[in-house]
Length: 97
Image (cartoon, rainbow, N blue to C red; front, side, top):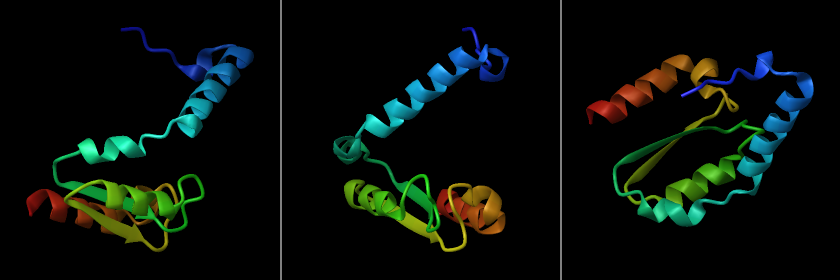
């Protein structure tokens, strides 16, 4: 498998690929697929996320049976960097329960 590093591509090609990925993510709605998830699921989401609103985390929680939602009050999209200890603690707790 060949790996493409976007930073090494000419600017127009990198921009086109980035936009294509952004549009695909923006225009793809997988909420109907959530009901197919049938394993315990941990949803970690930052309340200050400007990329994926907290409302989407609530929708995931509602759509995934046996899911657990942990909100990060002081974090945005990079909650694992902004609240590292809480992130690690919640992940370990979920994995060991």
